[in-house]
Length: 357
Image 1 (tube, one colour):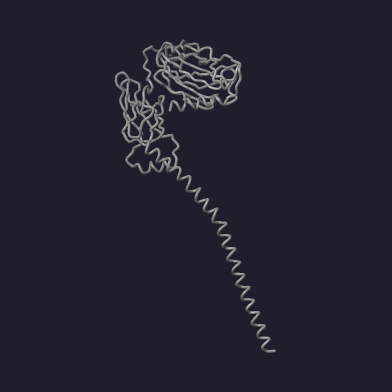
Image 2 (tube, helix red, strand yellow):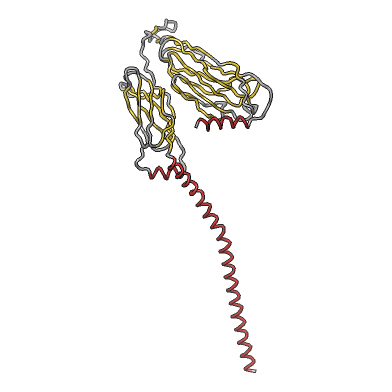
């Protein structure tokens, strides 16, 4: 799969027009223009700057450390047209790789994606790129990046206004040990699973809390896959799993075997037993593959599903003219018979006239 993604990634680069000028570009981290306090939700924008030359692709690894939890990624309004690796969380890092179709992007602050956070404790959050590349739209895949961004966000103690106090009344600061529940984050998982294997998921969340995993199959199944899935009555689709975190907040899950093939979006939820609410964390995607035999059977069924209508259509197209010719021939034979009958009748009439004469 990695080779396939790399092939697609490089393939788009080869389609780009070739030029021989080189320019510089860099990543930028746009921070919120407000104070961040414990308990606040906030987001940062990861963008690419390429003012001198159009960029064709961008990839990198963004590291996050400090007192904030990642709650999601938003790719809306991105300059990226095709993601070979969608922004995904790997431990405390976000990996991404995307392609900007021809003519590429040129300019300042080309948005790649947003990262949403929840401030958990007072201190600093450090954001920096451990790896990155911005490739020029020159058909050569020239890496024109000249710097990797690094930013720090300060998280202040939580505050609360005293009810009924005038506007100029000082704000009372809550104790720095105010408890903020940590949303669950999946830190390790099996990205690819055979249909007779098991999916493994490990994550971290609120210590001694309940975590619920939900599975949603987002794959578009072909006719062959639907037919095979209907026959595989013993296979199961993962739906939900509820587990209790340990004292360190770690949770683990091992799915049943014989899973139905598909692409499953896995989302962890923090289950609050006191308020009976569920808060989603940052999810991942797991791919369950069919066995090779089932795969080729699916391919065969899909080919037959395509060929049978084509053959039927060809037969119909062939037999319509044949049927028309046969019908016309039958009509001609009928006319000839009528002519012969008419001629015999005329001959009899002539013989009768000659006999009377």
